Image (cartoon, rainbow, N blue to C red; front, side, top):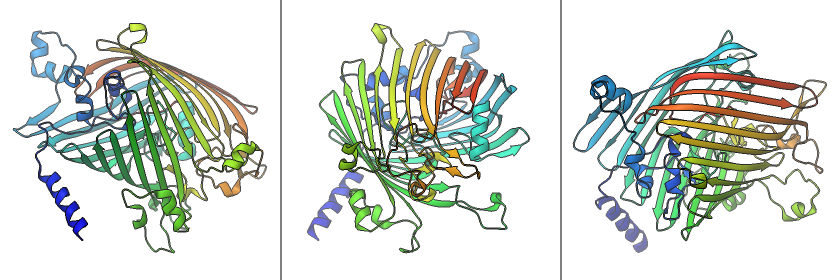
Length: 541
């Protein structure tokens, strides 16, 4: 009893203590935006925790010249000083500022024309708004909405036809050869001094230092979550509780699928990141995915809500059929401009089976290795990210789709699912408001096959299939099934018009070649458009 009273007094004191004189808010989860800050966040003087994203502004401000990185020089002429010139080049569309609050309203849009050699001219037409702001020093909010109509590149169109969702986006309505869909994001955030932050909303997160994540990525649709972030000394500890949707559960007979609400599943995630000196950090993730349980007669399992409990032993002690995963994230700063990073994902692990090397189906693991090189050879704003990803067959799968490691028909982690290896390199260069991005990706994937009766045979690629229906017990190897080779190249040139709401003009070209024993798909397209950069989109699969 005395101990409980003691901790209650400590908590009340933390809440009532004055906070630092700075507003706390989250930066949009977008790679082009983050590239402004990363060279400073990864240098030897930085103590930033870089592996759980999105970042808060205070994390960046402590390690980088935040204000100067967010402003680009505008010529001092009559038009640029006018209302229209200011709104076009350097200000929010609408903003209201008071003594201790700020509210901003900006456009959120994409108007892109795409020339696909297989589909002639196609397009992406997204319109929306982004509302954001801060109230006092501790409270912030952000909300955005997109209504979209699109005809997509051929390989993306095939993905949508199969899954009924746009990559990273929402479920579609088919209008002839076009897709209609919309996406909404929204979060509120509250900080207690410098130690705690609470965030609630519908959005995405990313765990890792690389381009891909094998632990948890922003690959799938936004989801409702509650997140607690604790920063003490050299430690960052994150608790994330999420609600996800399974689109594969059969709907009741006699009801159109559009009139049926998809069943929900739930997730509890703990992530502990520790800085080791100035050069290294190690992060540990544990995750549980569980469905509504008729035996325990509950949806939200109170056993997984404890923010400091070890989830894997708890899952085992309950005699649970829930899906448990563990992961590690590493980072080592070799120099002030070169950082090596890695991830290890353990879905199942039996040391004897791993050492035997006989391809047991339950050896469900994945790993990532990579390097970031900033200001290559002393050339300012020339940056390289290069990484290798490897995921064994059946990784992320569980007894059914309701406990699989995925949401809204897309994997939580890598867009290729499982049963693949991939090498991807991205070169970025920025000069004033101009930027060039070059990506080269090569992968070998083992797709699942269809038998003579039209049934899908599970070789371990689709994370939503049941591992109970695996092809064999032993002799499983990465790339089994329909072994395919995928080469993806993309070059993008962009011009930053307004850094306040990340308005850019973009032009680019994509080449994609996919080969296997049954078919060869060659596709290429060019695109030109204007857009606001608030999220990431992955068409490189």
